[in-house]
Image 1 (tube, rainbow, N blue to C red):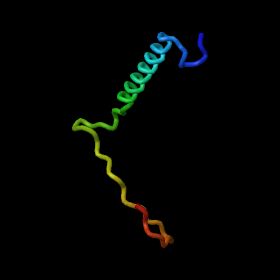
Image 2 (cartoon, rainbow, N blue to C red; image 1 turned 60 degrees about the vertical axis):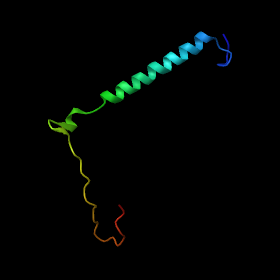
Image 3 (cartoon, rainbow, N blue to C red; image 1 turned 30 degrees about the vertical axis):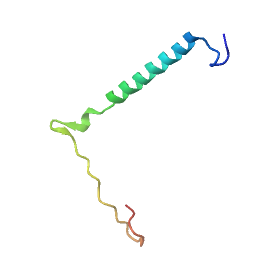
Length: 65
């Protein structure tokens, strides 16, 4: 067993590539399936609109948007 990755055997490199490929596929699948179903309506995704800027009494500063 070699302590460095540079001197490791080809099977070790293959294992590292396969494990990283499986991990990447798992991350992509979880990302695709993480959508919430309550956000979607029968006509498609719901439109989320921004609320107007809040005005606070007593502040003389300009509203930052």
